[in-house]
Image (tube, rainbow, N blue to C red; front, side, top):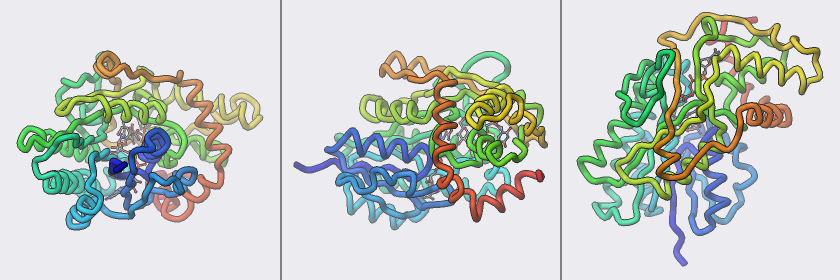
Amino acid sequence: MSKKNILITGGAGFIGSHVVRRFVKNYPDYTIINLDKLTYAGNLANLRDIDHAPNYRFVKGDICDSEFMLEIFRQYNFEGVIHLAAESHVDRSIANPMEFIMTNIVGTVNLLNAAREIWKGDFNNKRFYHISTDEVYGSLGNSGFFTEDTRYDPHSPYSASKASSDHLVRAYYDTYGLPALISNCSNNYGSFQFPEKLIPLAINNICNNKPVPVYGTGENIRDWLFVEDHAVAIDVIYHYGKNGETYNIGGHNEWKNIDLIQLLCKVMDRKLNRPEGTSAQLITFVKDRAGHDLRYAIDSSKLQKELGWKPSLQFEEGLEKTVDWYLNNQQWVNEVTSGEYKNYYEKQYDLR
Ligand code: NAD
Ligand code: DAU
């Protein structure tokens, strides 16, 4: 029986590794080709448990290389693409926008072009699924939610590059009929997240008795979703979503940054057998992020009603699981925070 080849880009990253694992384990009739450049954020150690599976292949490659992408499409004749590869950290986009423009915009267009060229208008059973973010919608005030109809209003180079890629995916659907669809998700947390992002950075700093940097006054609000719930949503949308549609994914789980960090400090005190209040002493308010969006909150009712997805975990439970994972995987943390991370950290945070 011929197997369906599915390309997952960015599969060695945080969310990508959860998606690859889920597809490799749940769909033995698919061959999953994970294409990743292995930037600082990509790590094959994230996939050690499945890397010998018979239906899994890894290809090291850069989505910015158009010739290489065409070659890969020719070689594997993909039936589906789930596109996660991206530069994903807002602070890095403020310091160095160009890589975001290249990977997130040009890289996405290269994939769209390769799909168009190789599929040659025969779009039967083909699917191009682009993974995006709620940050394209900009910032909310104290009330309201982002729906699929909210006007795009990105504020950081990262979100502007993702917004641009979303527009291009829609343009290829409208202009060439490429069978594409998009989802826009809120903040993810869980295992294998690179410790430049708020939750793993704070866990790592608390473990090492280092200051926990909170931008501005800590009043900004994010809507947090457990990464495995995002992977389930991606699975459901890939299989049952409609071409040309957008689906918002979110946790209905809003937290002010400072409240989240206070909760995390309590969990860490308990896990590390420290007197309550010890970790909270590490909280340090630092200079705010430029253009810092105040509030994100996703209305995911379309996805829930049309495709029956909903988040499975309460935040407190997900946070405990996440903390346990980081405490049990100190070697992973040490490996990814050696080298380049140190330079990044020193430039980003003026902290001792
Ligand atoms: P990540 O930074 O952890 O991983 C990105 C992966 O892409 C890495 O493995 C990296 O090596 C790879 N990559 C980067 N540039 C590449 C290139 N030029 N060619 C090939 N591979 C390349 O990111 P993440 O947090 O897992 O996010 C994955 C996707 O989900 C992104 O598109 C992001 O915009 C989106 N998203 C993330 C979140 C979140 O909270 N992290 C929320 C919503 C949407
Ligand atoms: O909303 C989805 C987005 O969530 C994704 O598209 C991005 O790829 C992902 O990085 C994430 O973006 P954020 O900027 O919201 O995540 P981050 O973890 O960087 O920051 C979360 C909040 O915490 C934000 O308000 C900034 C603040 N923050 C962050 C860091 C790293 C701090 O206060 N201190 C910090 O050191």
